[in-house]
Image (tube, rainbow, N blue to C red):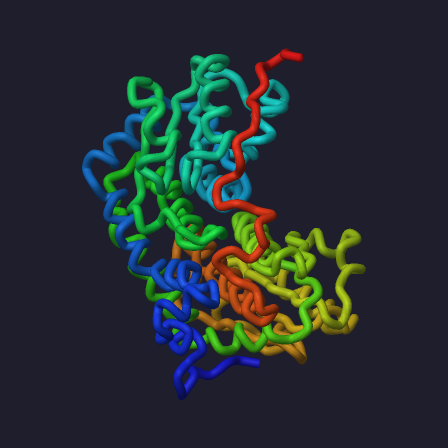
Length: 399
């Protein structure tokens, strides 16, 4: 059912109002701050994209007429690429793909197109072993590739190691986006916005406006729907499925990863396309499975998505349902559903729609973590680290 704006102090406001020492004791200070700062940091990233120097750099990379653009990263960073690759391909008419950095390290010859290309390396810290390992190998083996690093950490290896390499260019984001929490939140959405700047690199269109409307829509999520998302996360949630089509599949993957990380593995997750759910994964939905549906901004695509959600109603599949979109029909919400109905969402460019979807996923994971009495800033009790531990990079063809 649609959710009305909260009339009293929201849970987010209450958590934010607690003394910083208490937030740190409970282990959520960094994560909450970084989730809430996103609208403001988006405006900063958009201003950086509008900078004359940045625009000139992006134009020069596209003026070289790459035959393909490959976006790479690890974990959340490659999901940034999955969100933005379809958007760039549609806008630029250049084949674009997201390939995990680990796959490039182990299987580059089988997955990386040869010839003239642009490799976009996406990273929060830029210090993970894969970040520089991939760039080193592609620089050596693929002289036709130019390189763009989009990173949140000005001191990271990805930003500093290649200062004398003419093929490497760096888009440096604000230090605030270099999240201190274990999980990526504001870093993810700002990296997404930064990469989407390539969409406008060949035009004189201003980028500073890109974040304003997205920030306003995300503000609706934070101000109106925080308590509803907290309530959904406080139910019995042993498993969660996240649904998205096209670029939204990247948002579904990232939201699923946030739930997995922040629950310390206590919640099993499955990201899938709406149409793909019918081909086996639908059998996974039981009465307690949380279903999160990121609806497309394209009416024709939404028709397929509505049909799938109505089928779940007929078959009585899934538990609490969270449907994110605009002007959401009552009959797709489900009997135990929550409509995150966001006026203005479909007026955003597709990449910015995914930024908003991911904010919903972040809040669900954050509140589930608190419900499990875990610490959002470091929920995995030492299993995971903020930056992946160093490991050996093996030479191609080596023993």
